[in-house]
Image (cartoon, rainbow, N blue to C red; front, top):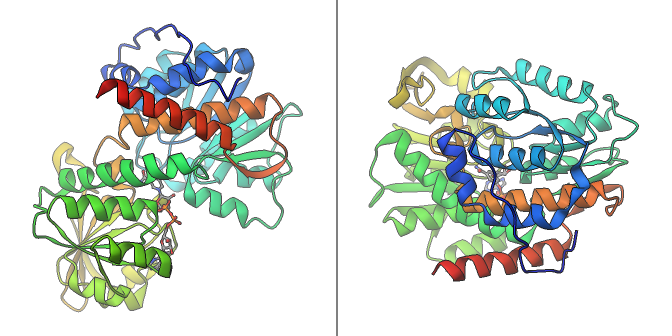
Length: 401
Ligand SMILES: NC(=O)c1ccc[n+]([C@@H]2O[C@H](COP(=O)([O-])OP(=O)(O)OC[C@H]3O[C@@H](n4cnc5c(N)ncnc54)[C@H](O)[C@@H]3O)[C@@H](O)[C@H]2O)c1
């Protein structure tokens, strides 16, 4: 694969899958087309084990990998697997494990089955597969390496006691992904998910965003652009400064919780809302998840504080859409989709173009691993890959304007 060429080679269109959402996504993923045209035959005959949200954009990546001669075994994350995409993926020859309603134990079983099949390459989301490999899970003698998609997974892998002895590229460690997906894509799609899940009005709303990394920044800036009043809580003083200089109110977490009717959790950190923080929440506060796997609320503390749970189902009769926790002290708080990532549970995930970029980073990084061009250990997306895709994206967007 050439990482310095910026002209996309012609690429044959993928045949329709018969699943309109996948075929629509494919029409809007030109970077993935040109990436596969440049990559060449490196995936031919390889088995790729995939753990990532099973939704239409993912299906386009899988379709391309299958067309390049790979075999795919894939499972999704909890609560985000789309049944129509599962059927379509099976229809084009992928092995799909699991469903939208998987419990954590069932999902763990699917991850074990992927590893038991001894794939040559792993595409991970949250570090669950890669961590297991570092802890002695079965591995093919032909195993080549892995990519990790997320901020949370990248952090987890960098904290492992024994680093991976195989190549791991953290896709999130890409300047381009942080801007296009985490900031601009998540900003738009989380707010879209909030509006779908609640039917509430944003202009004038008192909102709080906890964490002003790229994701929190995108959410805060999108909320404000729609007329919401936004308070940000951020531990890092440089990021807090960025927030205040962009016009947001910056406060400590207790103040944010005491003054916000809607709270977006964008830290990716565990138990940010523990017993002490629960006591600051306003009566009626709505909590929305941005960060990976909905782990930012201390579930034991919430259970201890709760007298009664009431489900207010939304469109599609999704019982988790809006769950009211009536607390022992008389207040109510509302969790949207159990604070799982709201753009995936209540909207269509990140915008197609953001994932066109993200999956192009994935495809090019997997190809470099398959070609033996990445050494063992955890590393960032190679800078030339970022550069060629940034150049291509500017050209694609300019041509359309
Ligand atoms: N929903 C999606 O589609 C999507 C997409 C990309 C990433 N993510 C996830 O979103 C999360 C955030 O991603 P990011 O790239 O912005 O991460 P990041 O680590 O760059 O930013 C998180 C920020 O939260 C701050 N923080 C941590 N604990 C805090 C606390 N108690 N109070 C206030 N601030 C605190 C940190 O200082 C940091 O600045 C991660 O879990 C990531 O995996 C979600």
